Length: 164
Image (cartoon, rainbow, N blue to C red; front, side, top):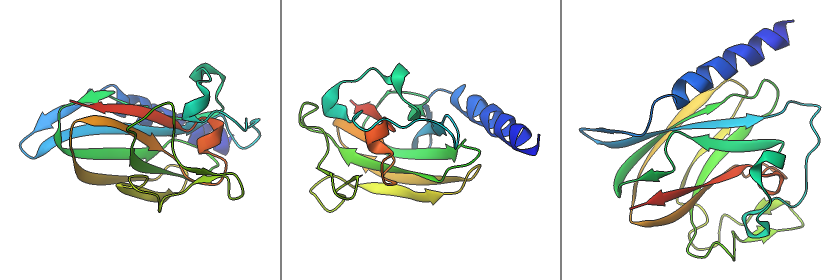
C-alpha cells in the first residue's frame, strides 16, 4: 500500500508539473520534464532507440515534456523522476540527424556521452520521487532529452525537443 501511495503521489506531482506549458520568464524559458516508467516489474524492450522509429505507446519508460517546441535562448529544465522504484536521469544532446540517432554503445547499453554533442548538460541520477533542474543556452535545432542509465534509452526513455 505504501508503494501505491508513493506512486500515486509522484504521478500526481508529475501530472501537475506537466499541466504547465513552457513559460517565458525574465530569465528565459522553463520546460517541465517527467521521467516515468511502468514500475520495477515492467518488461523492457531492447531497441526503441530514436533511429528505429518504434511508436512510443509501446515503451515501458519515457521522457515527457510540457512543451516539445521552445524558442532559442536560456532554457531551464525542471525535472522530476516520477518512478516509484527506479533511478533515472535527463541528458540533453544535439540531434542534427534523426536518422542517425545518438551514438550508442551496445556493450554498455548506453549512449556514448563523450561523443560530440551527446551531453550538453544533465540532471544526473535522480532517486525515485526526486527532482532537479538544469539551465542551459540552446541554439535553434533539434535536441534529444534522454535517460542514460544502462538500458533506459534503448527502452524508449527519450523525447525530441525542437528549439526555434
